[in-house]
Length: 501
Image 1 (tube, rainbow, N blue to C red):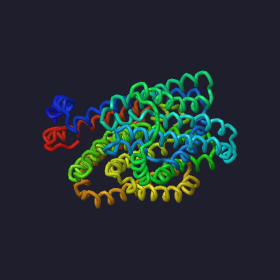
Image 2: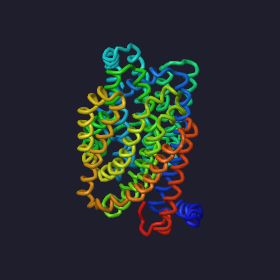
Image 3: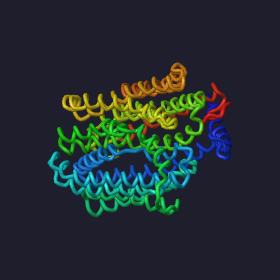
Image 4: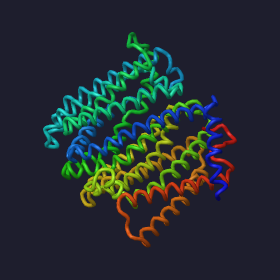
């Protein structure tokens, strides 16, 4: 076992070096993933540090109030969702000036409509939740929507052309600047307004960076043919984003109504701890795989092979961490946010399961988008929205705040299985081959679970830092052993006989 373990770094360096210098689709995806993953990782580190600091500067009520503001704004935003960026990336002519111009004006018009609706409806949200601050907070925070709609279309085309370095600097550079602005404002204001202004500033910086790094200037007239093609793609998305936001935000709306805002703050920060890295991985996968799949959208065998490999890698990464969170979630929350936030440990564990299934589900969704069939994703979202709407209130009412996240977990599992069946019919995916990808991750996870159970039953309970450290070390050992197992069975980690991503 030691010999394969010692070969891992050498084989990784050789394989990665060969791919990094390749102009193949796999090489481009690797470089793009490195740019997006590296930049996003740095941003997530900044966000993680920000959250650790802000939970000690601001009261839990501030996070609960901001969760309501962003949820309300998100509902209005998705009602007018058009998928303009996805349409530009997927369209073979998306890099042409006529298409960029049409996409920019569509995005700006949508953003202006969203902000107008938020501005007019903010007082109603404020009265519904009995919080007078919500009106001003919503109007300030959603100014970021205008900045997001005004991004340079050349930055989006850079992603289409798989030149991810510029897109990474725009997207994650703006995020890092927004995080720093939020922290500085929090030190000065010490209230929820720091979160609202900081959220708005992220998109403001992104807009500035997009024109600085990818220059373009708005002009008329619009090409009707280009406009029609972009609108045709957008029609397939009609209603999809609204259904998705019901699944994502229904728990916040319900909990904000039936529980004190402080409890909502504990819940939202616990869920955010999982959603932050999960969103990082989902965004990287979607942004790299969408242009890649778009180039091979008719090669179903190749698409299926890539999906199976991706699902296995996701399960291998996520399942041991899911067990770790289930065992040491309370210690992790206490370490990161403080003792009071340990109350959200059950919600944290359920959110980890939801995030894992969401990542697996997203890998199927990106295939639908690459084939210009986003409407195939609508059934999944509709079912998830219905399940959440039916379960979230009774689950939260009778089980406690964590019941809301249980409803989300049940919904995403059902939606994922439906998408898997739809993909089987579309690309001929073999479900038996797909299931085999989970064999090694399941075996590794079982080993992690046994070790953590033995540690809990045979020894005294560790304190916060030792328990978190012990759990992470067990996961890292499991990853190393699984890598060695893969080396022995396949003769390499990332070598491939085919040309898959």
